Amino acid sequence: MPSLPDMTTPDVMALARDAAASQPHDPHLQDVDLKPAFFDWLCRMGDNTAILGHRISEWCGHGPVLEEDIALANTALDLIGHTQMWLGLAAEVEDAGRTADDLAFLRDAMKYRNVQLVELPNRDMAHTLMREFLFDAWHVEMLTALLQSGSPRVAEIAAKALKEVGYHVERSSDLVVRLGDGTDESHARMQDALDRLWPYAGELFLGDGVDAAVAKAGIAPAPGDLRAAWERTVDAVLDEATLRKPEGRFDVHRGGKQGRHTEHLGFILAEMQFLQRAYPGASW
Amino acid sequence: MSSKEWPLWEIFIRGQHGLNHRHVGSLHAPDAEMAIRHARDVYTRRKEGVSIWAVRSADIVASSPSDKGPLFDPAESKVYRHPTFFDIPDEVGHM
Image 1 (cartoon, helix red, strand yellow):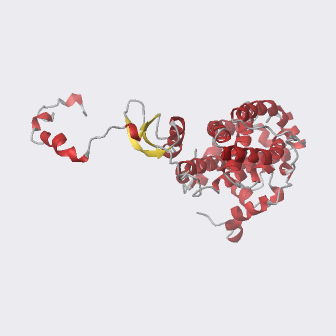
Image 2: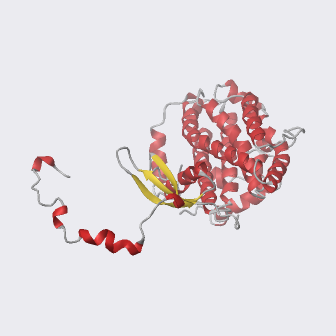
Image 3: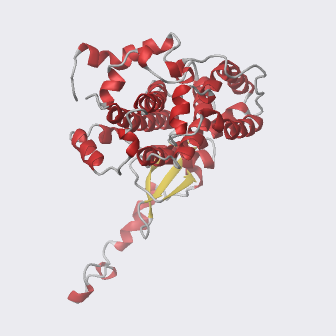
């Protein structure tokens, strides 16, 4: 997992350049027909981790106990590290002179491609952990599938991220079980969080033309292919947590992947992007 | 949580294979499993270790600071207990 000193290494751009120079050859990067879909798909991956990472980082200094505060900050840093890799590759694919930083800090809300689930407010620890669990359970299946990606660059990022995400899902499912099957209050809060978040979870499994194009190119699985494994994990954990799976549809809220967001994303970006907007090009 | 504090755990980490576990600090956790998780998050953020031990602080038997004299002072005048009277052959190298 990256720590703050890693992320503030002064010659990080040089390190990234050196790393890029030693990358395996990946013909998908030169495929002009595939480019728009590949770029969009990489932004979806990177935007999911950027926005969830930002949301989780909001707990830094506010965690209920010191140990949980640090664990959440670690998770946030992991996700922001994944963002650097996904958006870095997106910038390479786009080949328009933009960097990962440009994509993260200078794109407006309707250009963001994250699912709506990750932009919802934290509210409390119950919502924070339930949302993380619903996402982690998808994330781990997605990255596992991407190990077999026809794009060696994508497979490489997935392998790096999977080590951390394996721990994320272990931690979040453990806490969902402990709090779901905890006190009356923790149970009620976890059930409330699940009921509120459930209608957003399904967007992770909705495919569109972009998904079809990258699936056809052998880069990524079709989103729907991950659903059965995700449901197995979620059902087992919710059952152990004595939580009731909501009966309503889980794919009510959708559109984030296409750039249609809740009102919350604008506020996140306002905070995230303020510095670069106010002081263009400012660096550490 | 303020009324029910989690118990305190002492954390020991083995830095590399072949080294001993070393005490790195303490933390609060509700049980052993979470103590290991918390230790992972609090003390191994920079890939410090290969193994973690967590021990409930309450289970550690400690000597009392007031026993310092009887416990340690008698060794003071017994320099012959230090292995400093041997010539170490050069080929042995660092000991």
